[in-house]
Image (tube, rainbow, N blue to C red):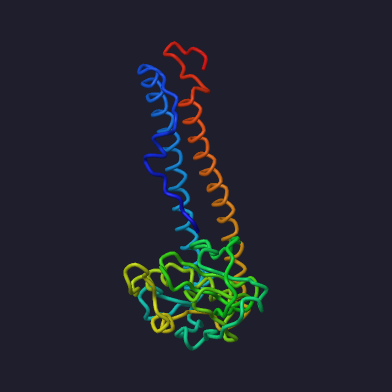
Length: 283
C-alpha cells in the first residue's frame, strides 16, 4: 500500500494544549501510575495467553505421539522427540503417506479465492479473512480439505485445513493423501516437535524457510486404523476449541485495555478530565 511519512515541518504546525508546569507534573504523575497499572494487567494477560498457547501445543503433541489411552502397551519409536508410542502404531516418513499438490490455476477459476500466510493465525490453524485483492494470473492451487503448511518462518506454525478450493501462496506446501486422515496430519504438523525440528532446519536470513526435501523426511507416528485417527481428531477439536475460546476472550480484553489506556491519556492531556487533587477533589 501507500505510506505517508510525517515530517517535522508538518508536525511542528500542530497545536497542543499546554497547561501550567505544575498541572503538567500532576498529569504526568497521575498517568504514570494509571498506565503502569494497566500495563501490569496487560502483561499478566499476555503471559496467560502464552501459557495457554503452550498448553494447546502440549495437548496436541501428546495426543499425536501417545494416543488417548494411558494403559496401552508402548514401544520405542527411536525418534528422540517422539519417544515411546503405542505398540500398534505405524511410524513412516511423511513422503510415504502424503504427496504434494503441484499444479497451478487461474485465480478467476477459483472465484478469486486466495489464501496467504497472513490468512492463518499462528499456532492455531485458524483461517482469518482479509480484503486483499490479487491480480489475475496462475497461482498454486489447493482443494478443499488439503493441508497447507507454511515453509516461511516455521516457528509460527502456519498450518491450515483448506476451507475451500483456492489459489494460494507459493510459501505453502500443499498436502493431499488417501493413506492418513488429513485432519490428523494437520494436528501433527502443529505439534511442538515438528515446529522445533522444522525451525532448526531453516535457511536464509531475511526470509528464513524450511525446504520440502527436509519436511518430506520427517517421521509421522499414527494409529493404523482410520477410526482411531478420527477419535484423536475429535478429541483435539473439542480441547482446542475450548482453549481457543478462552484465548479469544483474553485477546479481546487486551484490546480493550489498550483502548482504555489510550482514552485516559487523551482525556487528561486534553483537559477533558482533571487530575484529582491530593485531597481527593472531584475530577
